Picture 1: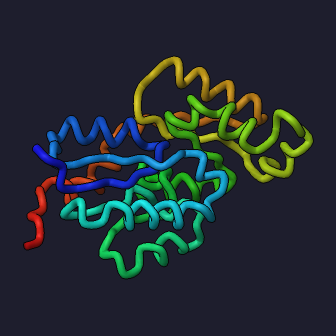
Picture 2: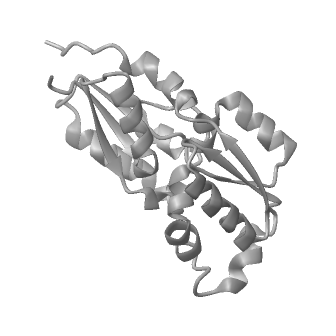
Length: 203
């Protein structure tokens, strides 16, 4: 089946999107991912997304953006204006991985929470330690993490290895540790209304 829906996604949620697509047999959906490293420079996300939309528009019946606001301060929504392209609602991926209600309860319980996903656990050294320059300037640690009190690992899988890694990351940062298995369900529930029906091509 030729793909008629394009999902432009953050590379940090690629595995989850592929799993959800396969489980739901969405053969009409193609996923194209932008680099996860864009999260370290969120001001670049809107332009990168808009460029991909402009390149692919006309090749698909529908385009959907699998990003939340992701630290763009509303600029991603501005970049989508006039395109008829929608995005995942919410402020960031932690909200749609946990579900809005659960996430806001966690944030209210402890505002000083630093969140991890399966992807961030795997790539913590590259994206957090090296990405923030902590390997070169460890003195920056209090600047970045001085206001945090705990790490919350919102897990998409029940990997014992990833749980052990996440605990090690919490110890490295000197933070308390909370593990929550959320799976793919919260994200899948957001995507199903958009993806489950194959759109028809415009004449």
